[in-house]
Length: 81
Image (tube, rainbow, N blue to C red; front, side, top):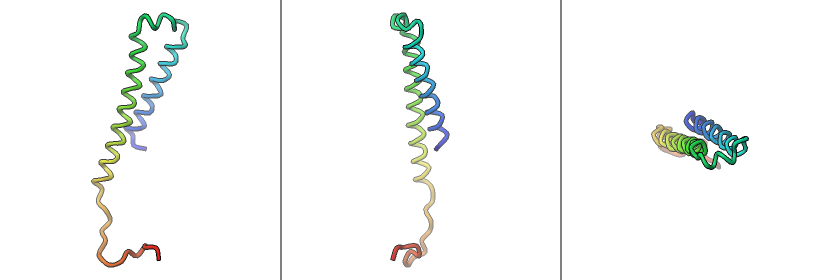
C-alpha cells in the first residue's frame, strides 16, 4: 500500500475516533451547541479521505509511467498454448 494511502487511513481513523469521543463523551449534549470540535473531527476525516484519494491517484500515475517490458517481436514465450 502506498505511504500516502496509509497516512490517509491513519488520519481517517483518528478523525473517526475523535468524532466518536465527541459524540459519546460526557459533554455530548453541549458539543452540539459548541460545534467547533464536531466540525474539526469531520474535517480531519475529510482530510484523511483526501489523502487516500491522492495516494490512489499518485499510485496510478506511477504505474502508468513505469516502462513496460520490451517485447522483441515474435510470439510471447510465456503465452498459453
